Image (cartoon, rainbow, N blue to C red; front, side):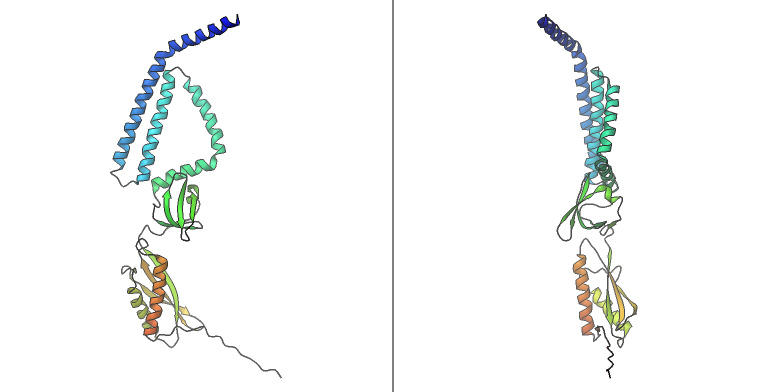
Amino acid sequence: MTANLFVDSLEKLWNDFISLLPSIAAGLVALLIFYLVARITRWLTRRYLGKTRVSELAVSLISSTAFIAILVFGIFVCLGVMGVNTGALVASMGLLGVAIGFALKDVIENFVAGFVVILQRPFEAGDMVIIGDVEGEVLEVRVRDTIIRMYDGRKAFVPNAMIFTKPLTNNTRTRRRRMDFDVGIAYSDDTARAMRVAVEALSGIDGVLDDPSPFVVARGFEESSVGLKAYFWIDPVETDFLKARSEAIAGVKKSFQEAGIEIPFPIVTVNATAGV
């Protein structure tokens, strides 16, 4: 009797499978059509966006998202043609998605922020940026995080959500970066002449831009010198800012020495009273 029930169950399953074959075939054909449509859409999206100023990463992201969206929609259509209750399936997936969303809140937040970063393009690979306490060169912009090589050689993996919660400075976007340093001259020296000598010295430094031109201002009176502040601009893409600042300081010092302008040491006066 048990054997007969088992055989009857297998026969019923086989008959149900045979009866569903047309629906399964139609569903697979629908899925194949949606797959082809998704591939064509991805190709057209890449071709169209490739002619615009959109970054390669954004092109890849948008085309891949379009491909996945059409393919997922095609899977639901395929299941519906096969007789699956897609409404109940969507509801179940919705509840599951809520649970996963709470569990992976930070991951999803970084993922969404990555989309915004890629589309808004506040920086690109090769830019010198400051994000919070991290400063260095952007190596790669990914969907979840951004890789930055700091100036000491270490790599920082910055979560994309941090980009929208921390101050962001892009040092290379405008191709102009102003540098400055302080220098003091003796009270006996001509301040206007010292300022001219410093400007001429800065203009002769490799990497210092002519437009905007360097300039020097008197900063104030100090204990043993008249304080000057020198300003100059560089192209941060073409010129290393640490090297440019070092050469500028050395160049001004050399020009002051040649012009007989003194950079005084701090003067400390000690008054001693002899005891009786």
